Length: 262
Image (cartoon, rainbow, N blue to C red):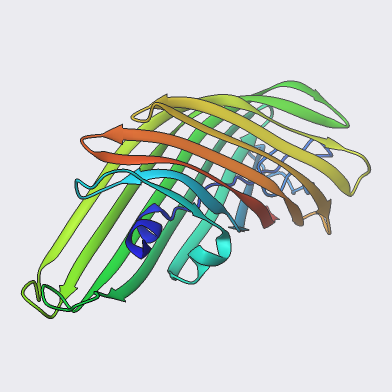
């Protein structure tokens, strides 16, 4: 079961944004902080973030039957070796270009009951999820804005098995899948006051996967013109099935981010 749990672990996506005045971009993690506009008219944002997502769904690898997984974030955190999550955006007037990158590496090991064929098995799971997109603001005023967006998301999931001791000592096996999905949707925000705002987004699409969707809603606060933060809740689902490799999961949980605008 540890093998299945580790191979299924994927933590995914968030976006950060900025725009002049109170009409910030709705990136998931940090809309507007009144960044100082460059001579060219462009504004930029970088946002590291953290998503405490649990996961449920069905997965299959190495030619084995599908297995249902239902793990909270605490279960996944126990096996986490390394993780990086970061987002960025460049914005000019109503136009925006945004990106998001997540990389996670998880590891686990377990002993076999009898130790004849193998004494123990080490499992390493590496997951990459990257989103690149463009947007255009169709509604915009002093209280907020709504963007129509489109982009592509690249998924890559790889699981490695290493056998120790017994007949299979030194044997290693790997199973992986990489696919690309096209996404469309909306992003937006609304300021209740100069400091407090509501932000959210919804994306849906497919391609390599049968369906790929992502929704979130958060409450943000501007500390200064260059630093803002948001806390909220996010759910992400993907259904990929090809050549016996199945990754049909929903990940959801609280998200927290800090954005730097310049």
